[in-house]
Image 1 (spheres, rainbow, N blue to C red):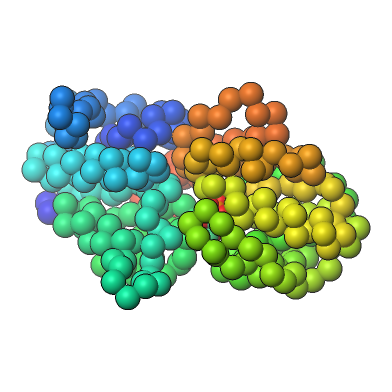
Image 2: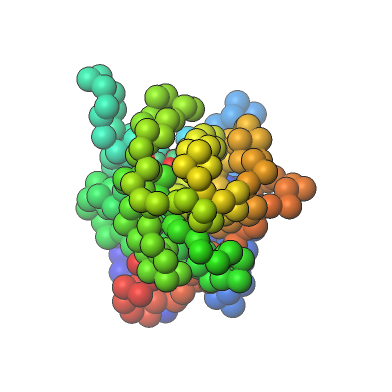
Length: 315
Ligand code: R5P
């Protein structure tokens, strides 16, 4: 890969979340690079860059949100086009990393999709990645290239201030989310309760134990993502059975919301659901849902990368 001319950068976006890409460009006082991201009649991905990227530092914006494989192929195609057109350095901004949950083998003859995706992203010349709240921090180790894993916790905590009832505890829906729950609790000046979750299948989970006291307390359930809504729905049930007040707020970085998720989250005790815009939210007329933009966070990361600065404060 050729060296990029310092300070000259371009941002291109796939089709996963054009609104977020525009907001990031706007925060940076830049414009999105012209490109065509389309499909051939047979469904194959068709990509064309409409401007030169020769020796430029290029940022490619694309969450690999559903349909994950389509969005992934768009990102690969954009990176390949940049590389073949002589781009200086290619950074992929993947706010939501689909396949992130497939980070180990749970059966005997399964792939490790997160690792496979990491490999193909690097094969097409992506030399640096920026992601937000990776499902597990060790995914970073699947890449040889540097990965900046940002966190949306401060952004969501700011949005939660003024919305939280007194006497609220942060609830981690499983042990894996405990470090994230602790960061919320530290910022919000409260304590953490942990649920023990068992995953029965891709759509079904069961809460078996609660570690901590929720009796007569309001609860803030946090998570990295809401997909089917099953984890949150089961957590709400378990917390109410353990005597929590019917004042529950949910905050998650990635609102993936597959079909049926909204119904699962529409429990009368759930007052608000806060997510960021790492994934394009298409839900409408859902008064409890609040979408907080991470455009300033990502724009801050781009600014620092272009200036060769440190991203440590954003992690
Ligand atoms: C699991 O380990 C994750 O952190 C989330 O709790 C889970 O992916 C949420 O998925 P769903 O909404 O389908 O329960």
